[in-house]
Length: 441
Image (tube, rainbow, N blue to C red; front, side):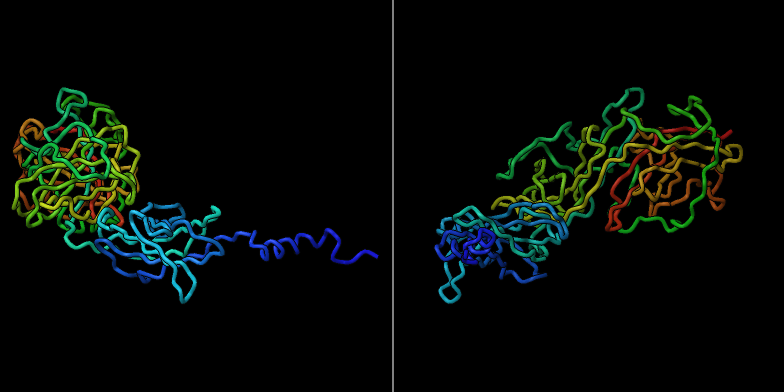
């Protein structure tokens, strides 16, 4: 009679027990982050304590950060070896528990301030097996980080008569350059210049209240349909087809602008651009004279080939000891399609402007600007009729108000801007129509 334990059907059950008794079976490490505690505010260089239990030796522990709920690996922010020789941490064995304790030094200043993150640790043992800890939510709170007021994208018409020509972004001395320089995260140099410039290629006579808080339309529930046929003018007074359609064109200028509060003692600032809040970034370093005060702005032309991508902007201050922590971040994407505008009711000095709805779902408001002189040729020209002093409008028409004196006879210029908003409620993108004209007779 054959002994029951001799049958091969019991080998899968017996083999792990035999190998374990001989010390031949390796199991993955069990990993736990013991500090910081969940929902802690972290800043500067934060020690992260990781406890690892394994049946063999633990070779190293790596620390990662990512957005809450993100299923990807995130960004590696530090590591430690069991020998205690890691460049960003140390390791050792806790005699009371028998677990290996690691301390990873995490420099939080390289990530955007005020970010809600989750961190997790991955341990690798001497057999090559890995174990991952549960994620721990934390919030960055970097002392000395600048306050980024806004980060916005603008698509603008080309200069008159020249397809795709560069506009004078913000007037003279704007510090605008034609391309981005890809750099690593080493100590920054000083490139170009930074000026307290006007707004986004519209000249100093045009103002967008980007830094004034909530600009979302009060009339957002109103969703009027534009007239099916409208009379419009091009370049700006050459007649064009009467039906309005939103347009996408390659003759546009793409501009990004950062604005932040000046910091006492800053020698300059570094404006940074990334494709994700926690990714590596393209960086433009700009020098600003010491002891600058008030709102600081930096505008930059950007390649049109990146229209479909979302970008995130931050700024950091340069001090005598180097680059400080990064500011909070905002995201934006360049709006490829431009609205198309037209004017009607031109006989009594109270024109009606109409425009197409922008197809981007983030565009929920509009600004309109009417000038006596061509604003592209006269950057100091101030709009004589505009709603840009406050909230946008969700409507697709605007009529010159009865309480104002009627416009005298003559030619006028106007353009329309569709405005997108970020999840925080701030204006994040502007798409300007071509400059148009109308004549009061």
